[in-house]
Amino acid sequence: MDEGGFRSQGLALLTRVVATARTPEELESLLTEVWTPGELRDAAQRVEVAAQLLEGNTYEAIAQQTGASTATISRVRRSLERGAGTLERSLQRVGRAGVRYARRQWASGGILD
Image (cartoon, rainbow, N blue to C red):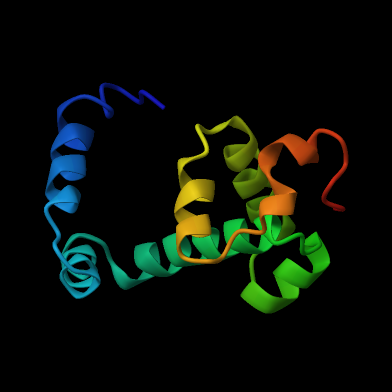
């Protein structure tokens, strides 16, 4: 996602700043200073959608529980499929990713749309 040099200096700085947070409370405070409530709400929704996809929930159930559109759910699923697995590993660390629904199973139909 290199949108006009976006990944260069700005993303590098953001990554370093976020990595300095020493507690979840400090990170939450930092996030609320950088992003608007709407941006945080959208990001939180996408993380919840990812967790529910990894737990094996259907699009219909995820949409009902999170309020996310099926388009958003599809985008999150594609991101999980194409990504490096970092979000999946992070969700597993906090107990929110069903191991039996790892990315590799989507290709074989492990999660129903």
